[in-house]
Amino acid sequence: MSEERISILKGVKKILVKIGSGVLTGHNGLDLDIIGHLVDEISEYSKKGFRFVIVSSGAIASGMNRMGFKESLKSLPQKQAAAAVGQGRLMRVYSNAFGRHELVTAQILLTMSDLTDRQRFLNTHNTLLTLMEWGVIPIINENDTVSVDEIKFGDNDNLAAIMANIMEANLLINLTSTEGLYDRDPRKTENPTLIPLVTEITAEIEKAASSEAGTVGMGGMKSKVIAAGKVTASGIPYIIADGKKTGILGDILSGRETGTLFLPMKQHLKSKKYWIAFTLRSRGKICIDRGAENAIVNQGRSLLPSGIVRVEGDFHMGDPVTCINEDGVSIAKGLVNYSSSDIDRIKGLKTSRIEQVLGDKQYDEIIHRDNMAVSR
Image (cartoon, rainbow, N blue to C red):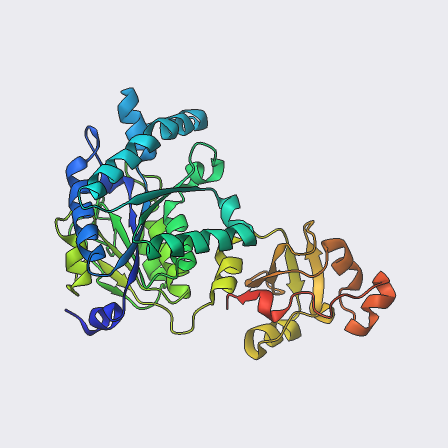
């Protein structure tokens, strides 16, 4: 047991467990033995006072097996149809397995649009907290039947990262079909070395992560490392481990050194700024000068019109927009108080001239600091 693991596990009560398709599926569709072992462990710790949320893949793979398909599906409609067939069976398997322990499950299907709307984001937060208070096990998946982007990009790792922030998790465990992050792809090289601890996600760490997925999964190790960056930025520790290993959750929660632990950042984003930084999709860009960059990055200031060089894209008041410096490097993302056309008219001007140019001035700031997540 390492000091880092012991320290991380102190006070852990709310845990998100992401289970990948490579863990859940076998030669004949869903691997009922693996699911049973994981449910047994989650149930045991639930009765000790831990609260779990599960982000589960497997709907498409389950549907493919139910329909007798042996080869990977290529078209989007085929994947959506397979998800529609498989999701019900996936939930039935979970419900029956947890039912043996007298625990109730809840199904939550989400698309990105459910999380980019602030009110729906908060509604999801409140629903999850209520379910956990009731001792219910929420089981979350992409609504693959209607969610085009998530099927195309394999976003359940990203979904898990977002949900960990929403539920205010103390730990995210990403169960996959490998033991953790290796220094090089174990499927293509001999004698790879497992990386047990990551204190910072560097270029070397990103390079070690392969983007190649398994035969039933959507995302490779790279997507898990990207998700780790998002999770640790919100102050949540993140562990990648082998979901097919018997007793894996017990090993992790007892402090044994298994898998790869990513330590949380000491200075982390609060929930709203995490939502802005990692959940919202930018609608445009605002290029700022060196003075504005220094004010935002080093002085904790808001963005004023005087520091704006140019505007890129077409966006409206309240939209998420990326701030880039004069070298084109992203430094922040925030919610704008003015449209792109209005900002273009007042860029480079002092705040005292906003009303003169626009005929009205509701805000001094183009992006207020409270609505801005700095990335540098």
